[in-house]
Image (tube, rainbow, N blue to C red; front, side, top):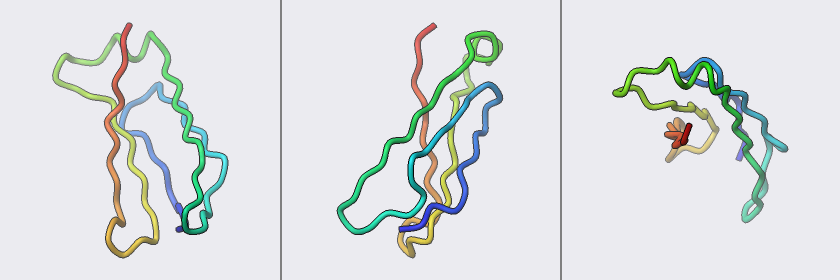
Length: 70
């Protein structure tokens, strides 16, 4: 699996990924940090999301919803 792009839909999220190429059965850590000021400014209907684009033919695009508490 090759992760080609990671993009945040929400400003104020910092995303780091240890590895972008994974062998079968291998895992990696995705770290997401958010700034309180930018998350407070979101509307109640908005949910912070992350877009991940891979070379997997079954799941080329993944959208992850981020849950948080202020």
